[in-house]
Image (tube, rainbow, N blue to C red; front, side):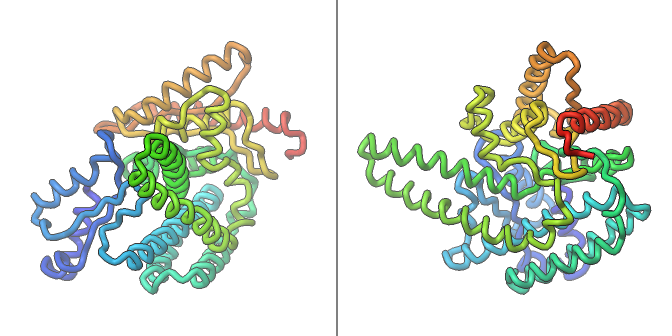
Amino acid sequence: MGDSLGFLEEKVKEKGKEYVQQNYLIMIPSADGPCRFGKYKEALRNFADKEGYEKIPIVGPSSENDYFDIPLANELEKVKLQKILFKGILASDLLEDITLRFRPYVKDREGINSLKKERLRQLEQVLERGAKTEELVRWGEETVRIFKETGGQNNGRFPLVIYAGEIYMRQHDPFTNWTIERLEEQGLEMIRGPVTEWLDYVNGMNLRNLRREIILGLTNRELKKALENVKKFASSFIKKPYTGHIERKIAHPFHEILSGRHTLPNPMKIIETLEREHEFHGDIEGESPISSGEAYYLMHDLIKPEGDAIISGMFHVGPFTCMQEGAATAKIDAKAKELRKRKPDLIFPIIHAFFGDSPDPNLDCEIAVFREQCYQKREMLKTTFHHLK
């Protein structure tokens, strides 16, 4: 809410309130249900009205509909906007990823942050021109070239750490007091869960749920309802290969430089693994199966290292009282306790960091211990995977 209202206030100073009221819209994806993810839009509408922004629309396409419910009257315009949004999210994920790949290894960290901001401004201009795939590929090639000039990729790799948890919090560094940079200062390379990971999960769960609803509709002879779900299923089914094709093209320039940072399987593969091992059920939706599933892969050494890129720990974040990440924390800790009974020497570096209205005074101490555990874990993995240096 603070980000959105602060942005609007800046634009009002630049262009006047009437212009802003007529030309701006806030989009904040949401979900059904009582958790924060389902209430952000409603809360933002309430505060925006109180601040005098009643005329500014706040739209919240829902994960329950695979984000197809963008409120535009024209279906072609709706599809066009979806394509632009996906390309923009994918490209910004790649920009974030290359920033995290380089920043721990350079002396001028602020220079890397400034470079990221400049490339983001360039990306915004590409999106405003229609987000043509060829232009985004050229943007990616130029981005990789400029980052390589900093020389950050020429240094020895630190242990890699997965930065997972509630999607809005893990993307919002000010709220965690830039903890991700504090981890980098301790000699760790971070892998932030991308927004596209969540989009893949939402698409996969919609296909799974719609398949079940179609079968139930046909079984109960509710043919009209079954036909409606078939149409929805077709839309989500077509979306998957399209996004995969676009992702391969736009991500191609980044492939070599980001080697080893994408060894986790996709979210639906993670859920299939948890179900097969009777660890979790996919019908419990949200971030919790993704967070606990990534931890499961890390605990069981199922993440195969690539070259000198070795994932050695997990930093798990969530808002204070978040039910999704609370459930994931309980599941992860229970599994770790069970494993330690069989393997007393198990080293499983993980921090559960919940952020609320007050800072955690022990976090720096916890990070210092976590760092040592990550370095120990990396040495153990080198023994397990003999091809590593």
